[in-house]
Length: 122
Length: 105
Image (cartoon, rainbow over all chains, first blue to last red; front, side):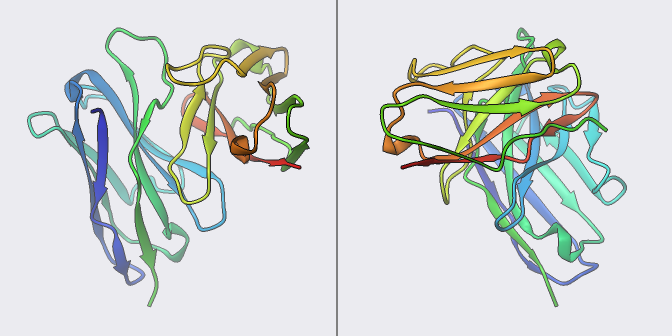
């Protein structure tokens, strides 16, 4: 079964750090682009970051640029999001989502994890 | 930055057709994807590349894209279609619309 499972969320104080993980299974992880998307309570979806299949190309939303770092370990079938200098407005459910593969022109997010909650509060 | 505009809400009676729009500057030149999200659940891709359906998505879900408007059409609406719907494109980065709450009357 194709699956993404996030972990690492929790309660953190403003200014603190957290590292999210996303474990992939059921597909060739190294062939796919990956993304992080977040959703604040009661709000819509907000894209956070993108990483290419090899990890050589990375993009960030302006709201997290300079504070968050996306990475992946294809040998471990895992995606990560290192979040530093956290703010109250970073409070959200964070989803990892699979994008296109090496042979596809589509960048649609076809597989999503169940999400992990990050709460930034003192 | 690129902006996608969706109506906050759409209401439709069971068995009727729901149309959810997504407006953007020359959106017809981009590939539009649509996601369905039910309360407490992760989003699910229902239409990709304007009008293609992933496996397992009913034929009742269809999409179109031209000019400045993309449209998700849900035919023969069922109670189980009640959800939030989001459009999404790539424009130097990923952009989501604000979402539309579909209410089945």
